Image 1 (cartoon, rainbow, N blue to C red):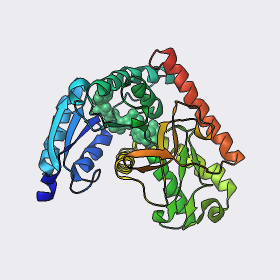
Image 2 (image 1 turned 90 degrees about the vertical axis):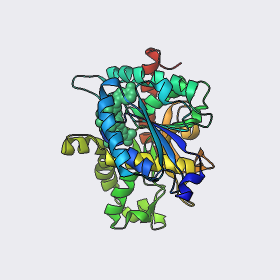
Image 3 (image 1 turned 120 degrees about the vertical axis):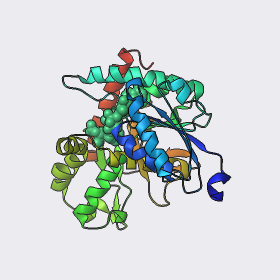
Image 4 (image 1 turned 30 degrees about the vertical axis):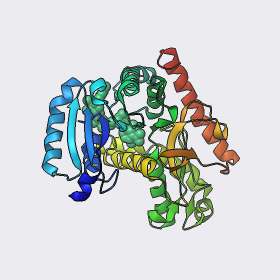
Length: 334
Ligand code: NAD
Ligand code: LMR
């Protein structure tokens, strides 16, 4: 269409492109859900060599969708080629935890992925690149990537906690018996892990304080928090595979809002390099309430942090600091 050809394509890199999340994510990017109905995209898809054949099949399906906004697709197994000129990068591909693997082993295996990918982005991406890490452990993988990309401003590296944010909003809506559109100002603090803290004290339901609407501390502590914190594990248990469609949806939501701006009167949760706000150790990639405008994010200032919240935030931040120490000792970050 005329609208689709008016703008230059945005170059979008996606790693782990033959995996589960990408089987949903790529089609949404190509359909215009990420950047809007008048913005063409070029997909640049990275996989490991043994998965390139499966990736060819995914590309056949992208072709068969005949998306008017999909300008072209490039595939490959070399990040130095695939990341050439990219404006947006989704780092989804990661090494899943296998049986008997310790946390340290996982961090080391992912270091081998995110260190070279950070370097390749540094050397080849466009000057305006924005990088979102979905692959786990997402926060620390983002820290590894940004630490190996000294020429890209650190704030252009985020990790995904929007899935946790959406999960928390969904649970609040169910509890209050309202549509999820009535829920706003949810905040996920900390790590995308079981220590994350979904904060309802600053959230609102239908314009009222969510904590007051719910008014049930027992539910908060023994139902809501563990449900949101352990949702990823519950889905693995039920489905036999980790969340994929919801993770892709959240990945789109995060980047869409980062590029195009958050809604007036609301905020979103984004894991971003900490500037020390709210006593969160500077430099770690930790989740905060953020607003975005003009392609830049900022941490929402002045939120109430009560004693209950303080202890929960501190625990998740302590875990992130430990992860940073572990990858430091592996020589992956300075
Ligand atoms: P998957 O195993 O189906 O797909 C991962 C793909 O990554 C595979 O095709 C694999 O070949 C590829 N890959 C591995 N190393 C790579 C490399 N160096 N370069 C490029 N590609 C590489 O996994 P999935 O279900 O799509 O999940 C992907 C990641 O996202 C996992 O780490 C998962 O734990 C994580 N995840 C995060 C969230 C979140 O909210 N942050 C939610 C769900 C899943
Ligand atoms: C999720 O939150 O669904 C993923 O991070 C999967 C997991 O391992 O919890």
